[in-house]
Image (cartoon, rainbow, N blue to C red; front, side, top):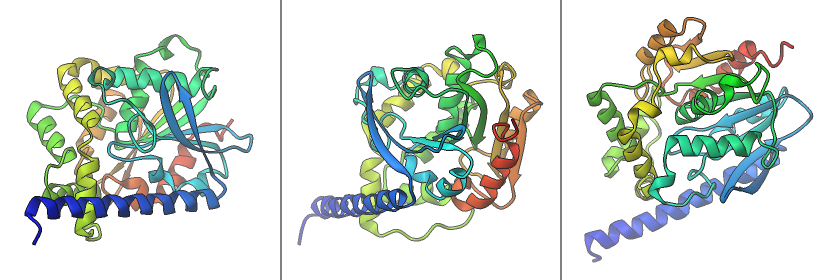
Length: 311
C-alpha cells in the first residue's frame, strides 16, 4: 500500500487533471455560444479574456478571488444582447499569467496595470465602459475608479458606472478580517469544503475527493498569499471607507445576497448609510455566489439599473 502522503499526491494529480478537463469543456461551450477568447501581452502580463463584440456599449466583467472569467458564462448570452462583453481573468487568476514575485502582488499594482490594459490605446482602448464585478473584482474596480486618475476625468471618461456584486471593500475589525482570511485560504480538505459551503445559500453538490485535493493545490498559489500579506501590511491604502465612496463621480449599484457568509449584508448597509446615493439590490435567500445562484434575476436587475441602455 502507498504511504499516506503519496496517496494524497496521487489524488491531487487526478483532481488537477479533472479540473483541467472541466475547464476545457467550459471553454469550448463558451466558444460555441459565439463568445471568443484571446490572450494579449501588455506590460509583461499576458491577459486572458473572453469577448463578444457587436458595436454595442462596452461591458467589463471582473471575477472574484480564487475564480476566473468562466464564472460569468451563464450571463454571456443575455448580456451580449445589449453590450460588447469583455470578461477578464485578473492578473494571476484563470489563465492570466502573473509572476509569483511578492512586490507585484499589491492591490494598487494589479489595479494600475489592469487599468492601463483595459483603457489605454496600447491595450484594449475601451471608452465609457460599464463595469460589473464579483467580490474581489469590485475592490479592484474601486481602486481603478478612486485611486488612479478618475477624479480628474469628465463624467464620461473611461468608466461610466460600477455594478458590484458583494464586494468586500470596507476595512473590517481585525478579528473579522482574520476570520475571512481563514475562509479564503483553506489548508485542508475540510476547509475547502467549508469554503464551498459558504459561497452558496444552500449546500453545494458533494465533490469527488481528488477534485478537493486539486482545488487545495490551486488555492495554495504563493501569489494569493503574497496578496493577503501585502494587504495586511498596507490596510489603510487597500480598503475604503463609506466616505471614500461618496467621492465617486459615477453611479454605484450594489447587488447582495441576503445570506452571504463571505461579505455579509451588514457591509452593504454600511456602504449605503455612508454613501446614500448608492443603489442596493438585496436578493432574499441568496449567498455570496449571487451570479451563479440567481443569474437570471441578477441580469434583469442589472439591465434595469444600468444607465448605458438609457442614453
